[in-house]
Length: 219
Image 1 (cartoon, rainbow, N blue to C red):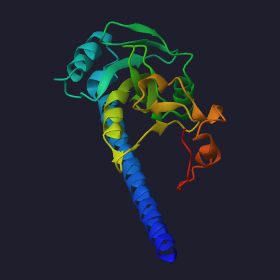
Image 2 (cartoon, helix red, strand yellow):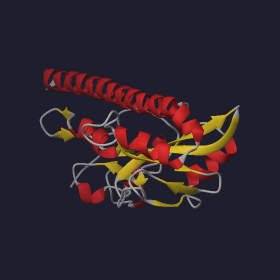
Image 3 (spheres, rainbow, N blue to C red):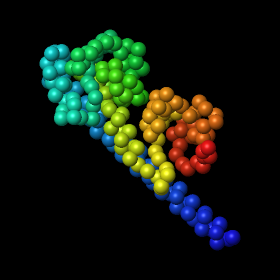
Image 4 (cartoon, helix red, strand yellow):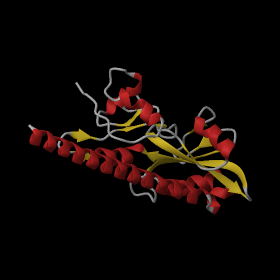
């Protein structure tokens, strides 16, 4: 019995260590991948074409970036907005972002802002918006928005397995599901709002940016 318990404890300890290592690696890779996308958009916003604020020239330039064969295939759409929230895109769509939280944030901080996952209005796809000021002579005159494909991020996360049955999910800080193999849950389900959900118990740790191993029971 003693040997069995010792062996079990050792296996659990090794499993926990492996889980923490894997999770930290996933987080670092995800952060690095998104940071690369941010750098790409910031570089784009500082080009002479974007600084010209000429809609036709901008659309002709940005359309080259989109699509599987485009220069920036990790993005589903680009758009340019004035400081009142009126935007247009090379996809021929236009509208207002005046009701988006990230719009008011970028007006306030005047530097790059990253949104929570949302359904992009430019193309109707699930995306993370990278919004970057377009500046001329140090003054913000417009906003370049780039919709990063969440599908690309989901593919990376869903490819990761833990042991023979484990899988990986991605939640917003408030608990809303962003990536899950059960696609019906994406942006539609929040385990932190369901006390019967096995993940409900970790919501306080997540809100405090804590990391660690928590045992949960699944039905």
